[in-house]
Length: 191
Image (tube, rainbow, N blue to C red; front, side, top):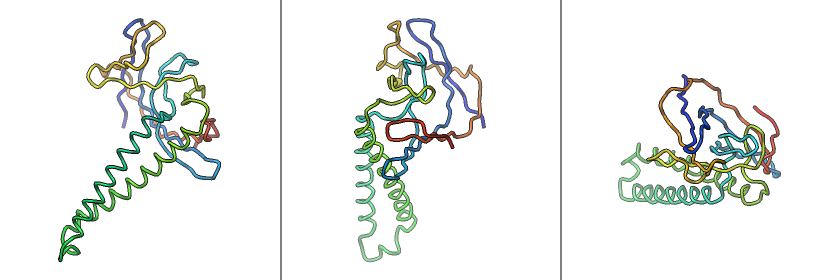
């Protein structure tokens, strides 16, 4: 299956590039031997002078996501307790209980991953690294859902980057790339 690309343009100059959705998995090898897997984020690399895949190392964003997942797990556990109450609770709602148990297992894995990522983000010195040139001179970009403009980043010309989903770009098929990094974001290898 091929994946659509989008165009990234600057609102202040003629900068344009394609957003090609490449599936990238990052595996951090910690000093205590633990492996933590995650995806990547999109941002600007000042050394490449381009829009790029970068590490997902924003402490505030990771903390908010962790709190949200913990709240979701608490609600699922509360619902599970409600289903387990009553005289015939062992026989009623079996499929819903199995589904809830699976949801809780997935949430526990996500919370463990987010907790590990947050620990790495708090302890490391460099910012999120570019996954092309490995520079830590990067800026995270988030596009507004209505205008498709990244208001949290100013291009060197003073304009903002905008994503345009016009399906005019190439359709490319990529396999998942797994980058193995240490806790400081230094490249150790690829799987």
